[in-house]
Image (cartoon, rainbow, N blue to C red):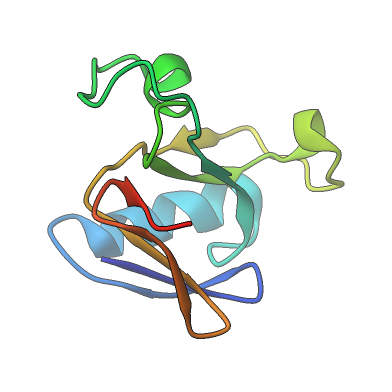
Length: 106
């Protein structure tokens, strides 16, 4: 489980959570910085393929990324770029559910 607030990772739970935070801190200098959040909109498929660049664009897929964000217009440079495409996450913005477990709600 990942909890993000204002572009920052405020809670990580689950197997390997402590190790993930440690690696992010070592590689990017800020274990709580979200590099980007991709919301997939492409309706062509609904099953993850294991290819993060493809999976991240499938409708309902949420892909939080950590590490460098320079390629998407940010200013944070890191030697690590981790992407986690998932159809099991929810996206709630200002109390409104936009994505619920792989389903777009808008």
